[in-house]
Image 1 (tube, rainbow, N blue to C red):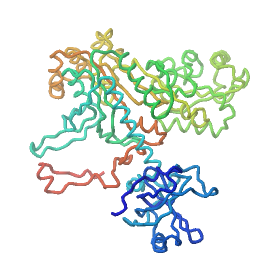
Image 2 (tube, one colour):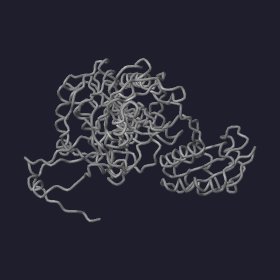
Image 3 (tube, rainbow, N blue to C red):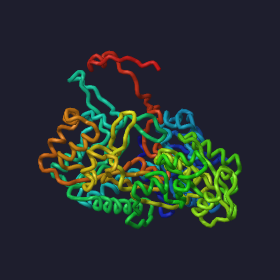
Length: 591
């Protein structure tokens, strides 16, 4: 290569007019206008217009005519001001062009399987198969540059606040409590396996015991989860742990971290402290523990109204300790029967039995289930309705209160999207706190940790852990950004006796606890300080800050929603020789 670049394709401006420069990059576009050839040369910094004229060099001009999209070239030429009618204010280099005197073709390119334009309609499967081409698109390059900046700001912030970045192992012990582990067979110890970490949870607690009172890490984690639309089997966390602190210390510091991110990445000034909702408040008002607060649509609790109702369906729910709630929307007052049916069908697709409705017009309720209601019930419902001239009221009931609230939460979000109630330029950050410590898993017939088994119970509720575990709250907190959980954490258990109580509540026997977590239980006996932490979903945070629609658009080489790596065609079988070395025989489950 003889022509090594002196400038990138986004750096040139009028101040360099008359200077000779060398540029390297990819052919983005070309136009042949009356014997003068114009080529857009692109690199990750921008695009510069090149000019090839037979008057300057017929040989170079003829060579340039053979160039095609995505050829890699190097050019030398002089910067000049564009004619007034050729200025392009949408380009960083739109005031200049480079008149080329030398051209070197560094590599050719086959015809592309798709256009490298952000507006092109391309299937995700094709994009991921040719990810090296997809990543040439300016939008994806912009996203990954923003992700890089996010990582740099993160490291700078935590370093400034006294944190030490420490790497924890990728080959660790399998502890199948929660999501499935990815396992790694040992060649040296046939029949034994490592696991890839779902999080560095136990390691960061060990670091607190070791005296590193402020730790952070931008770390890869792995979960062999069932397929979900926007989840990845490998993902990145900003992992944080602190000693000698309580919830207020962690939440306060994380609010300052968010303030720095928004200021530096988006040039937005956000204020804190962020609002806090208890888990119960979030579920009863919004039907989710991660409410989108960009629109003010709250669930109205109608349960007590129907405890003596003649409408048997609702009365049975009210008397069974269930939940009956409504969403009241003046914006949906003119919904057609078809639109109401669409909402009913939507609720069925997310696990509900359906949705009832009423229409308010003035002081009257009619339509839907109105014929089943008494005048007294109508009056009570109207009492809960703001003074709208007209509105549509959706009602969902279920014997399982949390299920009813969750269904209302789904409906709330769906209606907000359909009716354009969300201010997409708004930013709402909030905390959800006071989660239940445990939840009962009917399939396992035992209580499971809602966060993880190292989360501390509230100290004033410790005595309930053995007798009434469903009443115990966790010292946990989730950070919510526009309806997305971007971080979750807790104060940890720092005493062995309390950790053993927690394991008993989870029906984990002493032998099982010792096998899985014996090293941690022993470590807790050697002067463990009070500690706690939090972990941010780095991919999701990057997606939201970039305004991307999928986390795959902020990850360089993501998997598909079915956990396939299409570009490199993984996973793949191992050879017989490899399997023999590992002491593994494979049986294919033919489904």
